[in-house]
Image (cartoon, rainbow, N blue to C red; front, top):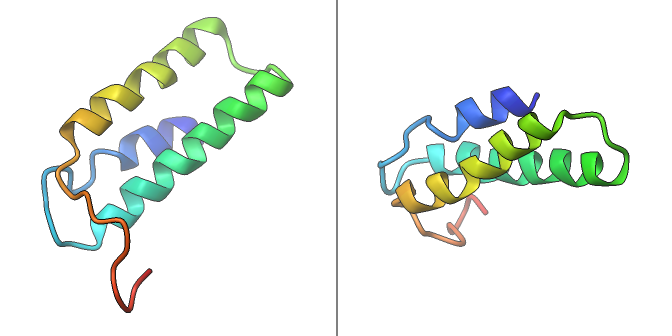
Length: 74
């Protein structure tokens, strides 16, 4: 699941004003929940945790659509 969330972070990356921002934003939220669960009850390898955690800053740097709320959509 975490790998799918990482893949989702690239869908439409660089676009502004499209609904792909929802996929990216919620994929990042899910990825953080996976990492939180691993922190509480480890199931990932240390290498996997480092890999997934390392993707966050790269995604945030590349994201261009900074809308926080979209009227009629959420």
